[in-house]
Image: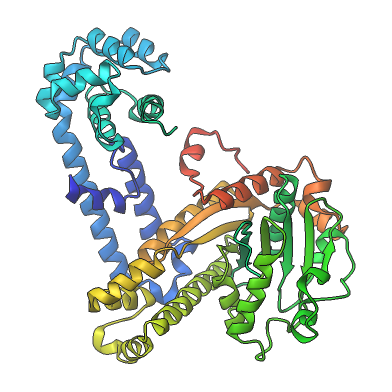
Length: 178
Length: 319
């Protein structure tokens, strides 16, 4: 994962970015740096054909590496997503409060077993259960919980940002710093 | 003199090109802070033509900064009210910070006196140009703000200004470590090292030794310039600010934050010409909200990310 951070950095995205966000930023940056924008032209001697080519090459590389990374995780996700009908999707969309119980509810209605998530993410089922039981004490630091939640929500094709924004404040409150 | 109990924050507003609206942004960000209840003092240090007082419908104050330097009149005594609660003004004068007679020690003295003033925020309007005194004053501030417009000439001057400021700071820091010859020698032999830009120079120096790398990490990491984009006309213009963050990082190697923007509005023009404080007299121009947002972002150091808002349409389209 460490090696991928520099790719995310180059695309100006956090590591929890979705494939859509990666695609979007890639095309925006590509347009900015290959075009004739005033931001670039004003650089004068700080910009050259050579520097531009080098940068665009690194941009392409980052995009290729990240799509490869995310798509290698995709198969598991799409397998479960098949069972998601429109009714289920709308129901999930209407949820705003992602407590552990709500997350379990969603997972069970999708017919996904914790073992499936473990198989794809290698996150110990015990931790997944702790997430669903709001057992905040199991997570020494926010960074662990955060990365588990990202994997968990990605597997279920949930809106990662939305879940993080709702779930993490409760953990922080438990930890004593709101 | 030092009063650790109450430390005011010093904002310096500069940015190369003249006419980009530095005084407009300074006076209105100041008004915005004052309306929020912060005790705020504006310091007009525009070398070319100090006229911040005009934004408040005031005549040129009797005393100015040169009286502080030449006649040793206390700073406290050259402050004038602006007519807005919590907001006061100190006027510079032509040459007040320009003169070669004012050295670094005197500027530091000025800053000590400024910091000792009873205020929450002091906003310094620096005017255009890259005079050494302008750069030094900019560097002594807590918030280094650059006002530019989405025009190639303004951006060129802005890049030059940021680079000059960074280089000035780098030279100053290296001097305190007795390494000033290192920079000079490296720059002199730049062809040998294949150094073509400031970014190359920084990269080269960083790789020269762990000691130098440590100096960069320790002393230069806090260097962040805040960008305000003025006279924006289209939604595409708004994105220029966000692009600048990317461009400055990738091609100048310097971190900047996009604090906010103000659109081009005839109302602003009218208020300035009738010498009315814009934020007080105008309640309907969208610029009012834009000033509030950028002021808030400067206080918190927040980067304005507009791409998403533009995509989902939550940002009002200008055209």
